[in-house]
Image 1 (tube, one colour):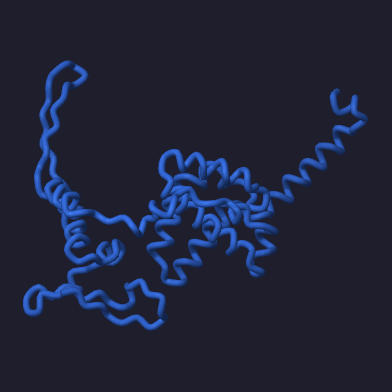
Image 2: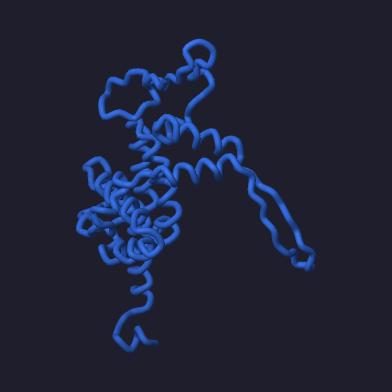
Length: 232
Protein backbone atom coordinates (compact mmCIF):
# COMPACT_ATOMS: atom_id res chain seq x y z
CA UNK A 1 0.00 0.00 0.00
CA UNK A 2 2.84 2.35 0.85
CA UNK A 3 4.34 1.85 -2.61
CA UNK A 4 0.98 2.30 -4.30
CA UNK A 5 0.47 5.49 -2.34
CA UNK A 6 3.69 6.80 -3.82
CA UNK A 7 2.60 5.83 -7.31
CA UNK A 8 5.06 2.92 -7.52
CA UNK A 9 4.08 -0.38 -9.11
CA UNK A 10 4.94 -3.08 -6.49
CA UNK A 11 5.61 -5.70 -9.17
CA UNK A 12 8.02 -3.49 -11.08
CA UNK A 13 9.64 -2.45 -7.81
CA UNK A 14 10.24 -6.11 -6.88
CA UNK A 15 11.76 -6.77 -10.29
CA UNK A 16 14.12 -3.81 -9.91
CA UNK A 17 15.17 -4.94 -6.43
CA UNK A 18 15.78 -8.46 -7.68
CA UNK A 19 17.90 -7.13 -10.54
CA UNK A 20 19.96 -5.08 -8.09
CA UNK A 21 20.51 -8.09 -5.83
CA UNK A 22 21.51 -10.26 -8.77
CA UNK A 23 23.97 -7.62 -9.96
CA UNK A 24 25.49 -7.37 -6.49
CA UNK A 25 25.72 -11.17 -6.28
CA UNK A 26 28.00 -11.18 -9.30
CA UNK A 27 30.44 -8.80 -7.61
CA UNK A 28 33.17 -10.40 -5.52
CA UNK A 29 32.67 -10.13 -1.77
CA UNK A 30 35.13 -8.87 0.82
CA UNK A 31 35.84 -12.51 1.74
CA UNK A 32 36.53 -13.32 -1.94
CA UNK A 33 38.95 -10.40 -2.20
CA UNK A 34 40.83 -11.40 0.96
CA UNK A 35 41.17 -14.94 -0.39
CA UNK A 36 42.58 -13.64 -3.69
CA UNK A 37 45.12 -11.57 -1.75
CA UNK A 38 46.12 -14.48 0.49
CA UNK A 39 46.63 -16.77 -2.52
CA UNK A 40 48.84 -14.10 -4.09
CA UNK A 41 50.95 -13.92 -0.92
CA UNK A 42 51.33 -17.70 -0.91
CA UNK A 43 52.41 -17.71 -4.56
CA UNK A 44 55.00 -15.06 -3.71
CA UNK A 45 56.39 -17.27 -0.93
CA UNK A 46 55.14 -15.00 1.86
CA UNK A 47 53.55 -17.84 3.77
CA UNK A 48 53.85 -16.35 7.27
CA UNK A 49 52.26 -13.07 6.15
CA UNK A 50 49.51 -15.04 4.39
CA UNK A 51 48.82 -17.06 7.55
CA UNK A 52 48.72 -13.92 9.69
CA UNK A 53 46.37 -12.22 7.22
CA UNK A 54 44.02 -15.20 7.25
CA UNK A 55 44.04 -15.33 11.05
CA UNK A 56 43.30 -11.63 11.59
CA UNK A 57 40.74 -11.24 8.84
CA UNK A 58 38.84 -14.40 9.80
CA UNK A 59 38.68 -13.17 13.38
CA UNK A 60 37.76 -9.51 12.94
CA UNK A 61 36.82 -8.72 9.31
CA UNK A 62 35.05 -11.65 7.67
CA UNK A 63 32.37 -12.15 10.38
CA UNK A 64 31.36 -8.47 10.09
CA UNK A 65 31.80 -7.50 6.43
CA UNK A 66 32.87 -10.67 4.65
CA UNK A 67 29.60 -11.35 2.84
CA UNK A 68 29.28 -7.78 1.53
CA UNK A 69 30.26 -6.93 -2.04
CA UNK A 70 33.77 -5.48 -1.82
CA UNK A 71 32.80 -2.39 -3.82
CA UNK A 72 29.99 -1.44 -1.40
CA UNK A 73 32.24 -0.99 1.64
CA UNK A 74 32.80 2.63 2.64
CA UNK A 75 35.57 4.38 4.54
CA UNK A 76 33.09 4.81 7.40
CA UNK A 77 32.44 1.04 7.49
CA UNK A 78 36.15 0.28 7.73
CA UNK A 79 36.78 3.07 10.22
CA UNK A 80 34.10 1.74 12.56
CA UNK A 81 35.49 -1.80 12.29
CA UNK A 82 39.09 -0.75 12.96
CA UNK A 83 38.09 1.52 15.85
CA UNK A 84 36.32 -1.41 17.49
CA UNK A 85 39.38 -3.63 17.09
CA UNK A 86 41.60 -0.81 18.45
CA UNK A 87 39.63 -0.88 21.70
CA UNK A 88 41.11 -4.33 22.20
CA UNK A 89 44.54 -3.68 20.67
CA UNK A 90 45.88 -0.74 18.68
CA UNK A 91 48.66 -2.85 17.18
CA UNK A 92 46.20 -5.51 15.95
CA UNK A 93 44.01 -2.76 14.48
CA UNK A 94 47.00 -1.35 12.60
CA UNK A 95 48.05 -4.77 11.30
CA UNK A 96 44.50 -5.47 10.15
CA UNK A 97 44.31 -2.05 8.45
CA UNK A 98 47.52 -2.72 6.51
CA UNK A 99 46.33 -6.13 5.38
CA UNK A 100 42.88 -4.94 4.31
CA UNK A 101 44.43 -2.02 2.42
CA UNK A 102 46.83 -4.35 0.63
CA UNK A 103 43.94 -6.67 -0.26
CA UNK A 104 41.97 -3.76 -1.74
CA UNK A 105 45.02 -2.66 -3.73
CA UNK A 106 45.17 -6.19 -5.13
CA UNK A 107 41.46 -6.04 -5.97
CA UNK A 108 42.02 -2.75 -7.80
CA UNK A 109 44.52 -4.34 -10.18
CA UNK A 110 43.33 -4.57 -13.79
CA UNK A 111 43.21 -8.38 -13.77
CA UNK A 112 40.66 -8.34 -10.91
CA UNK A 113 38.65 -5.33 -12.06
CA UNK A 114 35.82 -7.32 -13.62
CA UNK A 115 35.39 -9.47 -10.52
CA UNK A 116 35.34 -6.78 -7.82
CA UNK A 117 34.45 -3.63 -9.80
CA UNK A 118 36.42 -1.47 -7.36
CA UNK A 119 37.06 2.22 -7.89
CA UNK A 120 38.62 3.15 -4.53
CA UNK A 121 40.44 1.66 -1.56
CA UNK A 122 38.22 2.53 1.45
CA UNK A 123 41.11 2.01 3.87
CA UNK A 124 43.68 4.19 2.08
CA UNK A 125 42.96 7.39 4.02
CA UNK A 126 42.47 5.79 7.44
CA UNK A 127 45.39 6.55 9.73
CA UNK A 128 47.05 4.05 12.05
CA UNK A 129 46.20 3.91 15.74
CA UNK A 130 49.71 3.65 17.21
CA UNK A 131 52.18 6.42 17.89
CA UNK A 132 55.79 6.14 16.73
CA UNK A 133 56.88 4.98 20.20
CA UNK A 134 54.44 2.07 20.00
CA UNK A 135 55.76 0.58 16.78
CA UNK A 136 56.10 -3.20 17.07
CA UNK A 137 59.71 -3.36 15.88
CA UNK A 138 60.82 -1.03 18.69
CA UNK A 139 59.57 -3.46 21.34
CA UNK A 140 61.77 -6.21 22.77
CA UNK A 141 62.01 -8.19 26.00
CA UNK A 142 64.32 -6.84 28.70
CA UNK A 143 66.43 -9.18 30.84
CA UNK A 144 63.85 -9.41 33.63
CA UNK A 145 61.11 -10.31 31.16
CA UNK A 146 63.34 -12.99 29.62
CA UNK A 147 64.03 -14.44 33.07
CA UNK A 148 60.30 -14.44 33.89
CA UNK A 149 59.45 -16.11 30.59
CA UNK A 150 62.14 -18.76 31.16
CA UNK A 151 60.72 -19.45 34.63
CA UNK A 152 57.19 -19.84 33.30
CA UNK A 153 58.38 -22.20 30.56
CA UNK A 154 60.41 -24.45 32.85
CA UNK A 155 58.43 -24.43 36.10
CA UNK A 156 55.12 -26.27 36.66
CA UNK A 157 52.35 -24.23 38.27
CA UNK A 158 49.41 -25.23 40.46
CA UNK A 159 45.82 -24.05 40.24
CA UNK A 160 43.52 -24.32 43.24
CA UNK A 161 39.77 -23.73 43.31
CA UNK A 162 36.34 -25.01 44.14
CA UNK A 163 34.17 -27.19 41.94
CA UNK A 164 30.47 -26.53 41.31
CA UNK A 165 29.61 -29.22 43.85
CA UNK A 166 31.56 -27.32 46.50
CA UNK A 167 34.51 -29.71 46.65
CA UNK A 168 37.99 -28.13 46.43
CA UNK A 169 40.40 -29.14 43.68
CA UNK A 170 44.11 -28.75 43.03
CA UNK A 171 45.74 -29.38 39.65
CA UNK A 172 49.30 -28.93 38.41
CA UNK A 173 50.11 -27.80 34.87
CA UNK A 174 53.26 -27.34 32.83
CA UNK A 175 54.01 -25.75 29.47
CA UNK A 176 53.61 -28.32 26.65
CA UNK A 177 56.99 -29.46 25.39
CA UNK A 178 56.32 -28.25 21.82
CA UNK A 179 55.66 -24.69 23.01
CA UNK A 180 58.56 -24.78 25.46
CA UNK A 181 61.08 -25.92 22.84
CA UNK A 182 59.81 -23.44 20.22
CA UNK A 183 60.02 -20.46 22.56
CA UNK A 184 63.44 -21.55 23.81
CA UNK A 185 64.71 -21.65 20.22
CA UNK A 186 63.31 -18.17 19.61
CA UNK A 187 65.01 -16.85 22.74
CA UNK A 188 68.38 -18.47 22.10
CA UNK A 189 68.65 -17.92 18.33
CA UNK A 190 66.60 -14.82 17.55
CA UNK A 191 65.20 -16.46 14.40
CA UNK A 192 61.78 -15.72 12.92
CA UNK A 193 58.74 -17.50 14.33
CA UNK A 194 57.89 -19.20 11.03
CA UNK A 195 61.48 -20.45 10.63
CA UNK A 196 61.29 -22.06 14.06
CA UNK A 197 57.82 -23.56 13.52
CA UNK A 198 58.76 -24.98 10.10
CA UNK A 199 62.04 -26.53 11.32
CA UNK A 200 62.48 -30.29 10.92
CA UNK A 201 64.92 -32.67 12.60
CA UNK A 202 66.89 -32.97 9.37
CA UNK A 203 67.77 -29.26 9.67
CA UNK A 204 69.82 -29.92 12.83
CA UNK A 205 73.28 -31.42 13.16
CA UNK A 206 73.33 -32.43 16.83
CA UNK A 207 76.26 -34.86 16.65
CA UNK A 208 79.23 -33.20 14.92
CA UNK A 209 78.96 -29.44 14.38
CA UNK A 210 75.93 -28.75 16.64
CA UNK A 211 74.38 -26.33 14.17
CA UNK A 212 70.95 -25.58 12.72
CA UNK A 213 70.79 -25.09 8.95
CA UNK A 214 67.69 -23.25 7.71
CA UNK A 215 67.13 -24.13 4.02
CA UNK A 216 67.08 -21.14 1.71
CA UNK A 217 63.68 -22.21 0.37
CA UNK A 218 62.13 -21.51 3.78
CA UNK A 219 63.91 -18.24 4.53
CA UNK A 220 62.10 -14.93 4.35
CA UNK A 221 64.12 -12.70 2.06
CA UNK A 222 63.67 -9.61 -0.07
CA UNK A 223 65.94 -11.15 -2.68
CA UNK A 224 64.92 -13.82 -5.17
CA UNK A 225 68.16 -15.74 -4.56
CA UNK A 226 67.93 -17.50 -1.21
CA UNK A 227 70.88 -19.30 0.38
CA UNK A 228 70.90 -21.62 3.38
CA UNK A 229 71.29 -19.90 6.74
CA UNK A 230 73.61 -21.34 9.41
CA UNK A 231 72.64 -20.94 13.07
CA UNK A 232 75.43 -21.89 15.49
